[in-house]
Image (cartoon, rainbow, N blue to C red; front, side, top):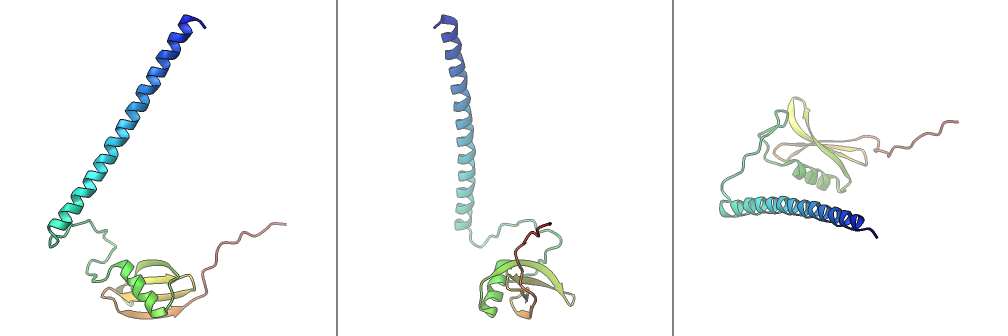
Length: 135
């Protein structure tokens, strides 16, 4: 093997090792920063449980809710007796803001923002997409 080929391979190996080291150190800094932010938030929450963290709320989401959207899904599932919740979303029923819980079975349940079931109805079940064959 020639001397110049050996030197070139050593230099390339060194450059690649330096790049890998740089990538690993950057990755570690990023994960350490994320972990330290998470632990700081956990410490803040445990130290002051009375203070709430304010998060921006989009304009189309009702703000006077006593029940969270996932809690509305749980309430609706308990009322119907099955857990095949497809989607829970904000809706309006007779001009009032409500949660609309849709089930795979086709059931629709309207839950008020304070957790009361307002209405339940049945539609055709949601079926998976079945492509048609062209002949």
